[in-house]
Image 1 (cartoon, rainbow, N blue to C red):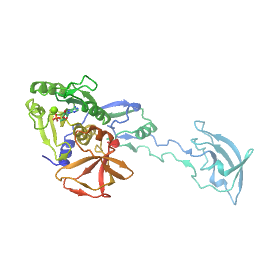
Image 2: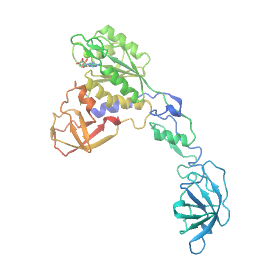
Image 3: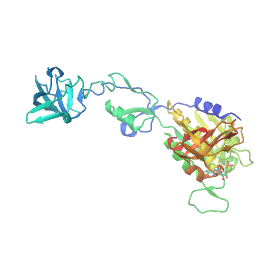
Image 4: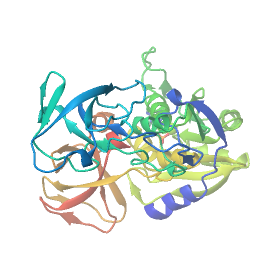
Amino acid sequence: MIPFDDALRQILAAAPLMGSERVALGAAAGRVLAEELIAHTPLPTFDYSAMDGYAVAHRDFEGDGPWIFSVRGESRAGGPLVTLERSSVCRIFTGAPLPAGADAVVMQEDVTRERELAKFEQRPPVGAHIRRRGDDLAEGAVALDRGTRLTGFHLGLAAAVERSELLVARRPRVAILCTGEELRAPGSLATPGSVPDSNGPSLAALVSSAGGIAELMPRTRDDMEATQQALRAALHSADLLLTVGGVSVGEHDLVRAALESIGAELEFWKVQIKPGKPLAFGSFGRTRILGLPGNPVSAQLTFSIFGVPLIRAMQGDRKPLPVRGRARLARNFRQKPGRTSFYRATLAGDTVDLAQNQASGSTASLAYADALVIVPAEVEELAAGDSVELIRLAEL
Ligand code: AMP
Ligand code: MG
């Protein structure tokens, strides 16, 4: 049995990197950048006005005010480049190029306009309300680092530096193999003792939000030969294989033995965590294998903790781990020490309340949880108001 931190380290250290592919900008959200994105043009590319108002030359404001100038010409967004005439001002609008010879913009709220004349009470400082070429990013600067998981904000920046396509990591193919005689398709005819397969759809969704391509394999019976065959089929084209169920110590828990019998190498199969103690990790050639426990909460939770970061690391993500936050406990709490524990909890402001039902079979408690509170293995008790570490489930 290995400690939580060691297990996570071992899983991430072995992450095999995917190749890369070019995708249109519109398809790049959620993908991981596989190139260093250089700004080949400065951002912005020209000096422009940040306000609707008047472009002026600072030196024209001689002596004491107020100053009256005639208004000559106009610069508007997308319009032609204009030149500021001597001892006059030029009408200008937000986003419009700064006229040649102008060095400040006065916003129209500060100007009194009478026909072709404009009156100014204040002398504007040089540079007022001007966005300079290269202010945001210099030409040749790194706009985005390799390994950035792309959000809409990153795509906005990529577009601003003229990119219509990006090189991103290939999405890992993730085969999901659920095992158990009792499983059937949700909504199908119920026979006594049967249960709908809830892990399959849940894990498939978690895989794709982590950037993987999920492939749900046909469910398999608890039979050695059938399990071996199903494993071979699932390993065939996958970068990562998730098995679900059958990794415990019962007579019908065949997955570990079946994996070893077909030549997979397992690095560990027990981790000091709760829930989810039976958790296998290994590989078959270049394919990584995560053997998840079958209990829905254990399966989905261990996948969130270990599988999501692994899929991200396989894409070269520089920050594969979920961001951890902190909150204060709503109530006193005790646990049996010995394993790093992950408690389902709800959040209200910066107060966190552990769910009453922490049973590993309680699918409802996981669906209703906002966060997983992480309690270190050695802790025995905590008091209301104590600060605890957590992962927000929406930010997985
Ligand atoms: P196992 O790890 O195979 O011993 O399964 C532990 C518990 O989880 C049993 O109650 C199973 O019926 C249940 N279980 C296993 N796989 C699934 C699944 N895919 N969907 C829902 N429940 C499952
Ligand atoms: Mg089973």
